[in-house]
Length: 277
Ligand SMILES: [Zn+2]
Image 1: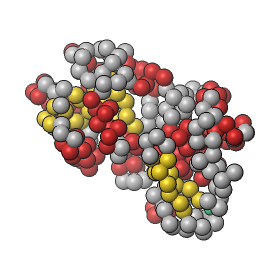
Image 2: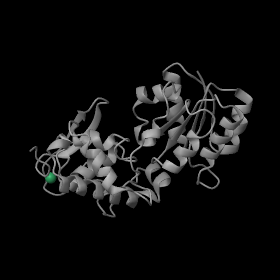
Image 3: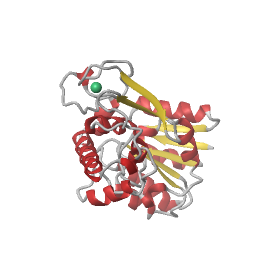
Image 4: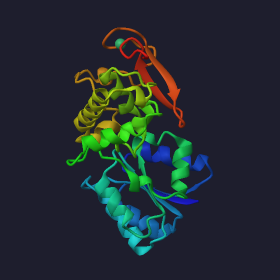
């Protein structure tokens, strides 16, 4: 597949290009803003476009607007949109563009899953955005609906359920672990064994943590700047994510890590603060 990439972050852009080449795709162009994206697509006629939502100069939705324009011109052009967070208004707008098949939407938090990313970049599947659950960053976030969608996933482990974008939209792999630490819930607990008050607390914490990190999303995340601990020390931003073997910031026990779920995502937790029940 011939791919054109638009992403303003140099490291992310090169990372995506490298992964695509590794899987045998041809990167026809890798650009850093929306006007360059439009020009590159006109020049290279790619099979797939991968674009960030926010790009220079305005960092609002330039990439998305470019994607919509490209699909207006060529309704069959597959487009994969990358975003720091699921943004339902964007997703809906993109789905309405061209034909709904051929649009994918990928959280940047999940780009590390090379196989999944390449699968999404071929965009054989329908965009997963149609069935998104309530967006934790939305002004109209419906906590009761989110709670009901979690409760409908009683057989899933809670950490996996938090990644299921059809339950709650917007939570990626980092916040999955951070939210459950803050809620003191073991990530391997089956949703069906958690009482409603605990699930409601998890939803509230998820919303709070995600919102606290939303404003500065692109620049902060690029610098590894997500924070959940409210500590100013840049080395102490997160409670558990990425801290395997290091002492828990609450109790001092060693932080654990395990692969979890069908996508074998890394989960971090403190066995003492979040005991298995
Ligand atoms: Zn602990």
